Image 1 (cartoon, rainbow, N blue to C red):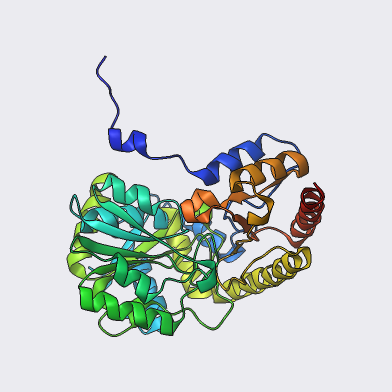
Image 2 (tube, one colour):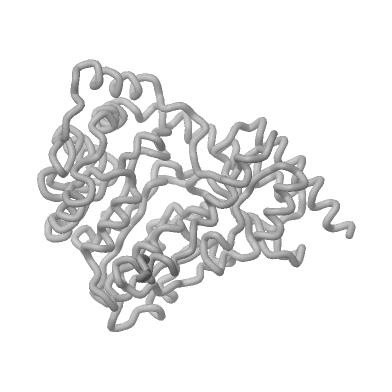
Length: 388
């Protein structure tokens, strides 16, 4: 028979995150610090808004772009947080999670052979999305000595005549790194000079622990060069509601909406009504969850220091990225043994790019009780390794 498969699709590696999650799900009494999912329930008033929409029979398609009411609230949110103004008619698109927004943004912007710069370690979707769009991913390896921030020097050296788009994944999954205003200003200068565009994935923007998040779209000359992507999964504990959004210049958003229209039609209606409530009345919920994450973050930073594990202090998202190079094992070997011997699931750093080798991603979107048990088991595990 003729080969039914796409060569591009076959060549793409499965997600390393899901691999360990699937293994852990089949084992008894495993603590999983692997999946980036809040351990909080969606706040009750947000759930109630979704339930009310069902009770009122609001179960029909919305417009392709999303509920007008929701797009208005997204615009209000971005204006009060960052001073950004977007037209809800043509410059805001509601998507099925941030992941859909990433996919259609890249497909709407690149031509075959264009280069997409991707700083790694990073979320696993960017490179496959670039490949499926026919683009060439160009990886910049972020460094621990730079606190895994992207530098203007690294960006400038990576740009060629074929460069079209920079993915800016901050606050960062898996490292927890952030970019402060001065960092972004230096990056923005290179972007304007080289005439390229930015996909800024800001899904963790509310989860920052050192000052307030700054979006590159708010810097001079950057609004019309930036597709800003965000959503409700992380900040509002709404992962299963599958709702995100993209904002940017009309020229790009019109093409993104076309792809969204043919592939999706519209994001889930019930989720959209819940999201309206989240944006209107959810600030206090976000603040409470962020405070809890920050307590867990500080606990882990101190725990790793007491164990003698090298680890820079993260200031965003809910991940920490300790180094395990001293044990002369690959990150996958370490994570596998730790899972089998101590029943704690972590994600190998190599799942987020080759430069993540020698590190582990630890999610602190889990209870403090689970974190304390896990760190005791990790201490026991590495004590045995050091004694060998």
